[in-house]
Image 1 (cartoon, rainbow, N blue to C red):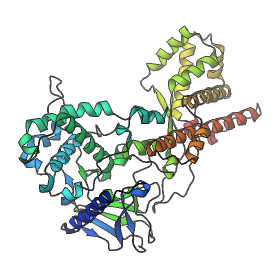
Image 2 (image 1 turned 90 degrees about the vertical axis):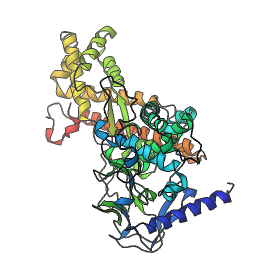
Image 3 (image 1 turned 60 degrees about the vertical axis):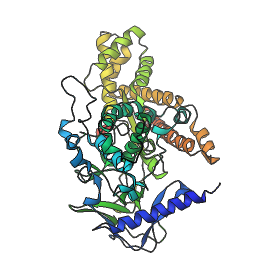
Image 4 (image 1 turned 60 degrees about the horizontal axis):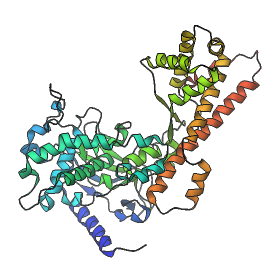
Length: 495
């Protein structure tokens, strides 16, 4: 690999300048036995590494709250106070969403970051902004060809590019265009709309990857588990902030440090003894490989324990129709009736039982596939009832399943088994083919990550099939007169 010595020099100089700036902040601390190191050789950017053995409960660094870049510390709050009223984040009576005064916490922080970035050397946060990434490996920035590597993974529908573009057009551009003298210094050349859109995407992705929820004192990764990319948060009204040094920490499913929140400062504390040479790692929460990729642009082997796969109701419904030998016109009415239920779900998540890390950041228990979602069993039973109603009790198989619990369970398991098998076929390659691809150690980082995501989902499907087959075997081997042990049946396996 060709070495760019100038780029390396700029990278190291940026690190030195940032650390010097950070240590000059009133109230900031940085332990003498840690250092910021260049980890680009393993695609980890910058990271913090122990330079000597460190004891548990050691304060690694401290960030004073008044040095966090947020709505409370931004000079924009005095220059454009009208955009800081998050209580106004609602459409007006005309339904116009393009009012730049109506911001939410995401777009407000995007505007703050853009403003600071455009101020250049006059920004007090410039040394910090200089070490934030300018490019991202999240799927938001992938080409269509690269996205195709994800195959049938549901993450492809959660990227949120179109929604983000709309939000930028309605909430970011109007503010900047209405106040060019505030955002662009007199010596700077104003950016075009396309350039501003690219910059807003960059800042939005920066927030997605690094920002903290300052009011709830929880990291964003733990709060925004189901949000699509960065275009919205829970209520849009919590204060988000960029926390210097905290975001230099990389993260994994096993970790050795934690960010504690206090009234005046945030502190990074070691959870257990850390040996010299070990990287200091934070925890972003129990995220699947797909979620880790979507938010942060990387995957790790240890996070694969939380991999999930979505099983659509349409696959399940189709399999059940085949089992019940229902005519298409009849089944269409059955499906319509099921979908009228207020708790109807279009898809169900298959996942392992995965115990949380210990208080010291270690994974001490295995992750195992042990059940199907309880909600899936309930909707399956609802579908049988709908079939009974539509056919006026003339579908013998549906009627028997409703009256015979063992028969219903067998029909349920066989139906889900067929749906799971069909779900596997939606991917363009098999689990074994993905393993073969990864064993060749491909050089394309994005393709490699995509394959690890789709492989993880296929492995969950494979484990689900094995579990279902085991349940079916037990059902077949149980004596006819042996009652089912309800006490052993997990709640999520009820049907």
